[in-house]
Length: 417
Image (spheres, rainbow, N blue to C red):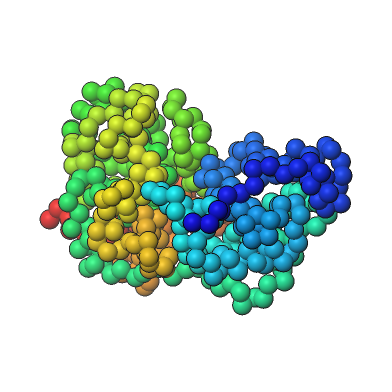
């Protein structure tokens, strides 16, 4: 394979000759501007997943410049960025992005929206070098993106496969293990994000059943005050970023709920049964602070933290090393499929959102738009009618505006009939 390494060092003379600045004050920055840019992002509290993605994009661009032009990040113009766009659109392989099981560069397979996002990251990076640091005089990425024709990118939202109720029901009934049933039903019936699923603690889940009461009592766990008097309810907490400490445990991924006070979501009988079934069959969690015992666990103990992670969710549902996740086994996920043809863990959030709308879903019932927005965790607006939906400090108001229409409208898969 051809050498795809990125430059390890540029001489001080080369760096000082770049652009119009000759000040030694920016020498260190020009040696590795990506490192300093990422350091700034981390300092301002950006999510770890965002930082990882940004670093990946910038390192790929750096490797591309070195391999194809022997150019430094601070010594380019808009034509280099336009060539990078062509590399992303027509190239066979990334230079630096490799598969999880191999050092072989991954095949480039980007939809227009993602390719546009890569270029927007370059615009932000060079904007920082020009406006914040003053080490460059122009933004080559901004000029290149502005000069590309409108037909270059199709920025309409990606389509998603339409799965009829009968097919989704067949899939749910096909699942053979309690953890898969509990996870997928939870995502389908709450519209939660993967990060919200893995951050869920036992104290934020109130199942009205003596078995669950015994489980909490044995572990000396007290229910969160938000759901203590709300049986068969789950509390998804308000938004926080990764590396935030919650109940004395630092979370590796954040919650993206836009409603600061969190969301109370009713639990129907089907999801309740699936959760109880899973909790009865899973092992115990011992490596967490008492009130931070998670609902969903990795099947194998992982160091000092056995909480299910975003990566392990995707592994369980798509691909787990040499074994196949359930979505791949069922034929709904494949690395070769286009984005609009795949069913990913995040797909279930969209399935919940779109299939509970009046005359738009795949089943006969529906929920009011305000209920859907509340369950999703969207931020409330100033609409007085919709604002009623967002109130759950008063149990009677929440039960009237959320619980009743939710339980009437939520789809059923007849899993335990």
